[in-house]
Length: 440
Ligand code: 5AD
Ligand code: SF4
Image (cartoon, rainbow, N blue to C red; front, top):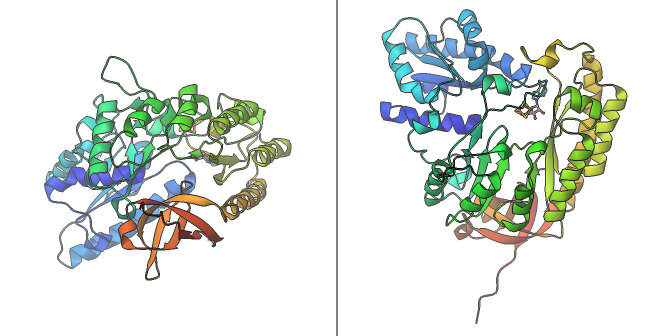
């Protein structure tokens, strides 16, 4: 989501004459877009700011004028005052919900001495004030992110998101469709719909009601040129029957789903305030796989949440063995200021967290390797996104986001073609194009 937000900040600043540059040394203004989800991410902000201060001083000494330094994103939202106290040379502090006001903040920062801070949760939504998204983000403009929902009302015990991104809000169907149409017209073939809790989507449908994620995906699938739809991140509690049906009926929905479970222990799931049991998660996965047998899953795991015993951890390992994940992200629990879990007793020892994380990651790595090895001998539809490293080679992505390399002509870039997978390389797959026989 920060990638998407950064692109939109670029859009909003373009009319003022700003354009992106490759390195901070060449910048009149640097915006550090930050993440507060774990301690490590938040700590990086201060070391990065120190580096930017130095670059600013060097530029000034070289007669290049003042470098404006802005801190955006969730660290700014949560620790705005602390940032200004520890790094008084920062000019602008802005939260994730106010970046449509950047032009005004930049003007104020130029006029006034002292920092400009805006970490409101405004009543207006930034999406109504941002200019149309310009050329999107990744892989030769063939794939793009699109935020449809933001914020979260779930209040998991460990998580800062409800405090930094704010309450859950959904963009209207009309505004999402309009943005997706512009993306498709500019060549985008694959869209990833974003939200902290994307399957709680309930955007205004323009007819006095609200749409579901499944309904929205159905509308998006009708847009000419838009071949593939993904969404992330979803919550097991908000997987409803319409979404399960969509995985069966909507061919544009990719059979690869990121569905965080965090833990396999009912006791810890309860302490985490996740609102479901391990068995309920298994059941949701069973129904999804019944609807879409080639569906693969990815997930998030936390080890060492307060109160987690060896037995709880073993329950998580068992859930992983039972379900089988194609990919996963796993983390040591990191206490976040202001969240309920940070103040709970029975914090788990750092060394124990390390040990559990290693075991968990070894198992997940094994499963991921097995999943990738299993692709050899299969035929997969691949969206070609660019040339490969070797001459004559193309690279693309499979439905499961695996990078795939084949020998093939440049004309295939931007298209989807069937590939027979012949080999698994370290982080990618290799294969050969299956040429469709021309009709006589
Ligand atoms: N400590 C460790 N991991 C966390 N996550 C969120 N908050 C924390 C925390 N305090 C993880 C969860 C979530 C992912 C985005 O980050 O697994 O799904
Ligand atoms: Fe955080 Fe996700 Fe829980 Fe919301 S559902 S509080 S974003 S972990």
